[in-house]
Length: 236
Image 1 (cartoon, rainbow, N blue to C red):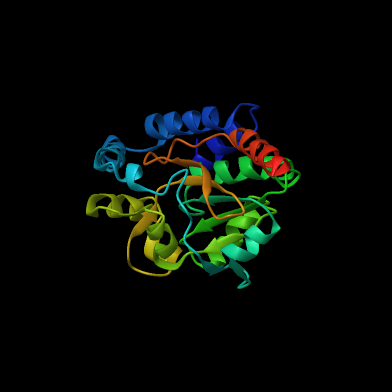
Image 2 (image 1 turned 90 degrees about the vertical axis):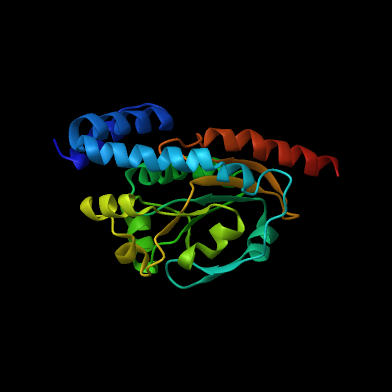
């Protein structure tokens, strides 16, 4: 069975996002990847966990740095322009080559109308090239923009960017996920997957950062956060 067959089977099953990701991880580690590859990937994830970098990333209560990034079609998106329209749901992901990210993006798309009905803007950020971001958007049928964060400069300002170790680089290339090809530059850095809700004052009111890329928050968590923002705004 190929990875795509496994992904298709998991996608067809009605279960929460994390349950899908758990099924994908189990299938990949037990049916597809050689033990030495699994060991390298697990070791790199544990090293990132042990570094405690996620604890230093921006979190609820912090103010977001100003940014102005192009989307996959070259259209500029500034933080201020987005916040002028309403609260912002900002999600950082690794790239089109990452099946966990693709499941995550599709789950967000399924919740997009619920988010927008609460006045929120939904935007994704990736270090991959504009062309690969367009492929991401098309392949996952996304109705929200993907911003191009070349070399992960915005991810760095959020405290999310980390350096891929040498042994994991070799695994990436072996699995067809050469970051120099997908990202169009040679830094070999990635963002930790992260999800933020930012109020119209530019302050983070919800944050979820996980150094383990196989763990993602369910988009349903965002709805209560946005409902809370509406209640606060109505009292002002």
